[in-house]
Image (cartoon, rainbow, N blue to C red):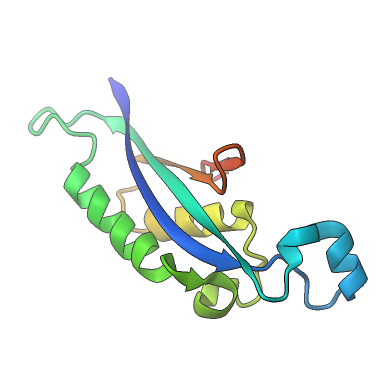
Length: 136
């Protein structure tokens, strides 16, 4: 029997959406207010879903305390109250869109959980704007 367990977390971060090799006009046309040279911030909400078989000994798919610690170490500590463009090496040359942030989070968490478990990341940039990434 396969079951999905979910853990919610949040972090606050600033970013600027722009491409270094584009003109100001191109960046403004594509990214609008999100291209603010002084950055802007979001209160990101994160849902990490892990799917797998229930362990007959523990009754867990994954120990939620372990998942909580992984999220704290791989997401909250490196990204919370940071400027993603300036403080997160992953975004030195990667535009920190919600899509790219979700993929980076997925990759950071994926390396910490066993391969037999499926992983899904849902990242809310605003209550109405969110992305989901399953590693495909």
